[in-house]
Image 1 (cartoon, helix red, strand yellow):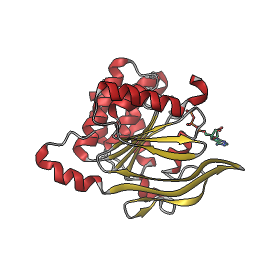
Image 2 (cartoon, rainbow, N blue to C red; image 1 turned 60 degrees about the vertical axis):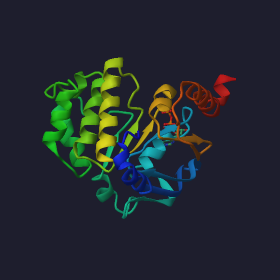
Image 3 (spheres, rainbow, N blue to C red; image 1 turned 90 degrees about the horizontal axis):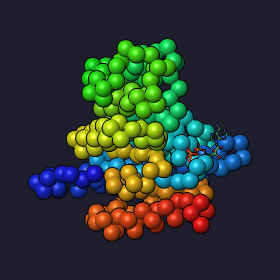
Length: 256
Ligand SMILES: Nc1ncnc2c1ncn2[C@@H]1O[C@H](COP(=O)(O)OP(=O)(O)OP(=O)(O)O)[C@@H](O)[C@H]1O
């Protein structure tokens, strides 16, 4: 999402060369099943990268591998100078993560959940996360068991953004959000990525959102990660064509 003014263009260009995360030859296996097969890619400062792939392609597995929470068999993940697989605690303190399943204790209030997630990620900036939660219109005193999935995503997003991470990893954050909540989430992400120059990787099945917001697209297919060029310049026709290409590539068997 490059909304830099012209005067900051050079700085943005320099920034763009600076990878926040560098994954090299990453292989993840569940027993004998190779889910991620020698994946290599970078996530760069100020760029929003979308991760596409059919059901079961390994998107969740790949995102988890990037916080050392999946069985990585070989390869490396570096977050700046930090070796994520060797020092996951240190790396996680600089990462905001929104999982696909919100496994929070049902009795916990939204506000307590912010602290819980913050503690897990070795970081806690309570007041900022609580302000974000209020901005999202979620009552922080309500138990998360009483929240809808969309409201739960907003709690996790506030927790993920609250400590101003260098890297944001979001697993299907737009699923089951109503249009209002979707706009809120997208706006919060856009603002955050643009102002703090965070790197961001978002998995989704929503090709409309990906085509509209992506600076880069990674496609996961047969365990391999393929990079698809940025969707720009953004012209309606090229966008439609690009979406069709992505759709065919990602879901070839389903659309035939
Ligand atoms: N803990 C696990 N143990 C064994 N196999 C697993 C485990 N977690 C995931 N898998 C397998 O790994 C593959 C990839 O699953 P993953 O959830 O990463 O895919 P996905 O692309 O996120 O799917 P979806 O779009 O449906 O959410 C699947 O075949 C799944 O069955």
